[in-house]
Image (cartoon, protein in one colour):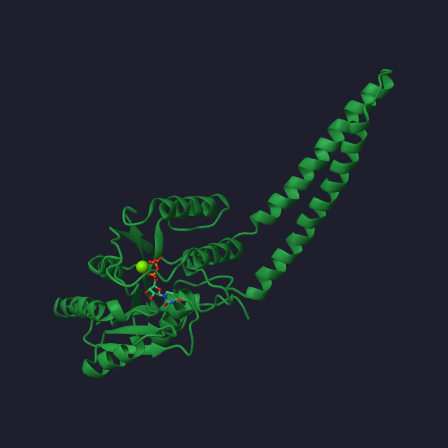
Length: 326
Ligand code: UDP
Ligand code: MG
């Protein structure tokens, strides 16, 4: 029988923790009694250096019922690191793991459908928000605009998916091969390539406590995503340099025609040609240097070059993970 671990990152969540534990505990019980998951399944709270009583409450929960467990980080490391810490801590014990925020803004009832997709053979199931009614106008527009921008830059992101997600143990193992320090997990997971599905749900408002993602953190997460998933911004710089050089050349041709047809060449044209020419060369050079820097940044990450999904006719379990990087 499949063992499910639910990983819940928590930062100063004393106001919602007991309610969340109750709701997820009931969900677990229903799944166990429905024969979908094993009785060894657990809910693991990751305390991300909370300053309130979150950890004491987690300890209390795990002392009270074996279904609850906890991991405490030594200090606040941010949601993405806390989430990864939880996934890696449980990966060897679980067959599959679902991550969900402590405030239960993501609908816990979608977990049933996620489990069904796992049972029918998916390694990854993305929770996708059907609507963003609970978000402010500004957050909705900027978030959706950001996903569109990432798509335009060639990144494989799942539209309106955050970190409510099911992953099989082998998918987490493959994810552990992503070595970057600054994480944008929702952008990395699609790169693993395993069979995936999406499950839609309505996102509700936070019941208590306040958001731990102020605008500054949102922007930092957004830039981590952009820069770790795409080198295209560098190429835009190089292309801008080329455009400036072309403009300088066109103006040069025009001025030369004027000169040979006996007309006066205005001073501004001569100045503009040299400014655009030098500007174009500098910008293009930046783009070229940037291309090398970009390639270095890819190499230092040492991401797996490939993930083997299964093998046939070879020794082993026929479903092992191959890592391309050494
Ligand atoms: N979180 C965390 N560490 C942090 C910030 C947030 O573990 O430094 C957790 C938080 O407890 C919650 C989840 O990340 O479980 C999402 O945070 P929040 O609900 O505040 O974000 P929002 O829904 O407003 O984007
Ligand atoms: Mg939230």
